[in-house]
Length: 455
Ligand code: NDP
Image (cartoon, rainbow, N blue to C red; front, side, top):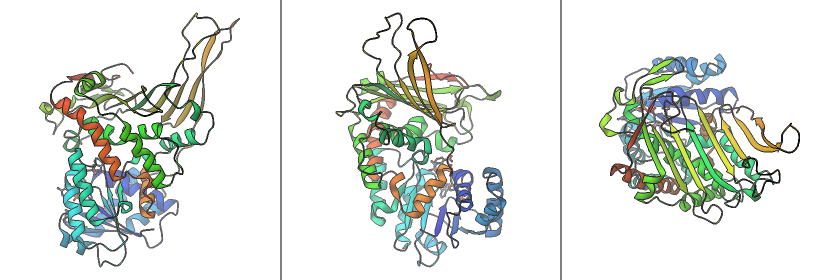
C-alpha cells in the first residue's frame, strides 16, 4: 500500500467534503498503515497547524459519525505545503526527497489537470508513484486524448486512476452481483426479453455555488459522459472472465465501443435538454439557474438531460438505453430499471394489458425490487402486480473511502481506463455538436418539479 497521499487542491470542496471524511472512515476501520501520511498542497499561505485545525473542523462537519479519535488522528497525520501545483520545482520540493512512492490526488478544477500532470512529470516522482485524476476527464474527445498522452509520458496505465466514484457505490456493484451470481437473470438479459433499460439520476440539489465549474460543463458532460455511461456499461457488458481489472475493464470498453454515435437527426429526436427556473424544494425557495451568481444565461447550460442510446451488438440490438439526470428536481431518485417485455399471451383473458416485469436497483436507500404479476385476491383469475424486494445493507465505507483504498492499494479495477474515457467522449460529442448548432431547443422546468417531462 502507498503510505504517502498528496492532495493537490488543499482547500477545495472535494477535499473537504469527501477526501478527508473518507480517510477518517478508513482510519476508523483500521485500513490505513500506522505510518500513513497526507501532504496537502494549496496556494494559500497557512501553517501546517492552521491547516490541521481546518481538517478537524471539516471532519466534525462531514464525518461526525466517525470517532473523535480517528478524526484527530487523520488531522494529526496531515501536513500542509504552500506550493504551485503547476511548477515542477515547487512540487519536487513540497513532496520531499524522492524516496518512497507517493499517490498524487488531483482534486483540482479540470482546467488545471493538464498543467499539473506536466509539472508532475518534471518533478521526478519515485518509482511506484500513482496519480488520481478526477472527473470530468477532459472536456472533449480531443482534450481527453491530450490528457491521456500527457499521462502516458510519466505513468504506466495501471498507475493512473481516473475516478468515477459511482463505480464504488455498493448498489452499483450490485448490478454485477445480481447479473453474474444468479442463474435466473442472464438467460433473459438480452434484446429478446428486455424492452428498454433506464438509468436515472435525479437530484434535488441545485447549483450549490458551483457555477464556476458547472456552468461550463452542464448535465451532459458532468453526469452522462462519466457516471451514467459507466452504469450503462455494467448493465450492458458481457460476463467477464473475472472481476479483475483487465477482464472487467475490457468488457466495459466493449460496450462503449458498441454504442452508436447519434446522427444530428437522432439527437433532435432522442435527446431533451432543459434548465430549471425558480421554484420550491422541500419548502425552500430555489432561484432560477439563469439568475445564479457566476452563471452566464446566454451559455444555455442544461441542468437536465435525457438521452436515448443504442448498444449495437448481438445482445442488445434494438433495445433503447434511456439515460436521464437533472438538478433541482422534486425528488432524489437514483435507479437502474430493466423493463422486460410483456408475456406474449395472457391466458387470463385480455381484460387488461399484461404488465411487464421490471427489475429495479435503487440507490439511497439501496434497494433491489422485481415487480412480478401474480393472481389477485378476488374471485377467478385476474393478474395483479407485487414487488419482491430487499433492502441492501448499507455500505461499510463511503464511496470515496472504497475508492481511496483501491488507489492506495494500487487496484485500478474501479477506475476508468484511458480508452474508456475516450470512447465516452466519442458518444457524447455529436450530441454537444448538434446542441451547439441549435437543433434541440433548451426547455425549462420549475425547480422542485418532475423536470420538463413526466418520469
Ligand atoms: P474547487 O473549485 O473547489 O477547486 C479545488 C481546489 O483546487 C481549490 O480549492 C484550490 O485549492 C485549487 N485550485 C483552484 N484553482 C486553481 C488553479 N488555477 N491552480 C491551482 N490550484 C487551483 O473544485 P472541487 O473541489 O469542487 O472539485 C475538484 C475536482 O473534483 C474537480 O475536477 C471536480 O470536477 C471533481 N469533483 C468534485 C465533486 C464535488 O462535489 N466537489 C464531486 C465529484 C467530482 P487551493 O486554494 O487550496 O490551492
